[in-house]
Figure 1 (cartoon, helix red, strand yellow):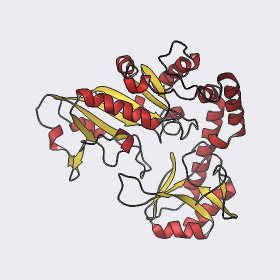
Figure 2 (figure 1 turned 180 degrees about the vertical axis):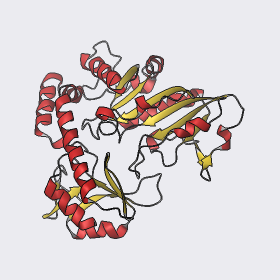
Figure 3 (figure 1 turned 45 degrees about the vertical axis):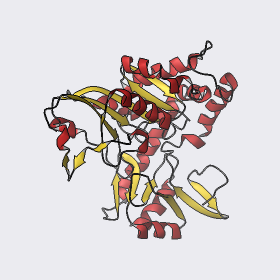
Figure 4 (figure 1 turned 60 degrees about the vertical axis):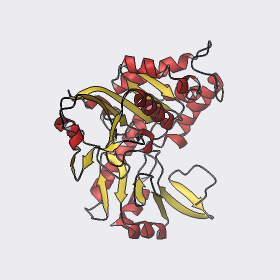
Length: 339
């Protein structure tokens, strides 16, 4: 389906109107007029883009300001912005590959943090035996804070049963959790405090709930120092400074949009009845369904949802995405259709 403008809560396909419950603009920032004004102000100050290396002799103050804000917000010692979340993931995995040979991944982890030789964290529903032997070694574990086909955050209780002989670096992809999950939308990074961890690293896109192009890496000061000296970072353009400016000026907007989103989720919790055709958690703005019948039923009622196939999944994903911009009438039509 091809559309000719940003797909907000309503879209037109072949001149036919549809309600749209897809995408990842959970807080509805991309089409928020107040946020767009902040973007325009940022463009006036910083231009449409700044393509120079972050290591050039002229450095933009907005990067340090934004990264300090992210560090405080995420509860990390330091952070580094990048031009995309995928680049953030690639930078981290490529760097860790130089010093560590053993990679493990939580099932169905996003490709951005999936090492090509990574082993599954679980085998036949149990922790991989290689993680419980007495061999002293450094290992990397990669996981999504919330999987694409889940409505509950990933549990990191598996750390408790890993051998103390393992020196663990945990890499967490928070692309679908930042701005939504956790206190004030801080995600899960600061809440993972296992004494089994030697280091934890957050990577994330900023283009989902926050509605700006760019990515973020957060960790301890030593790691951010070495990753910022990597050739791939030095030779890459930074995140768009105008968007970072808008992000810093939009704190109250984010709070208001998050409040609207959770009001919508509260409405859904009261309106929806338990159904084997879908999963819903009032703390996360996605209804996940494996039912192709439900997808077709919604389409016949002029409701379009997100449907696509991830590289790490065998079947199509059906994601009904709720945003802060959906109205009560939108939600009523949705719930009446999927009951």
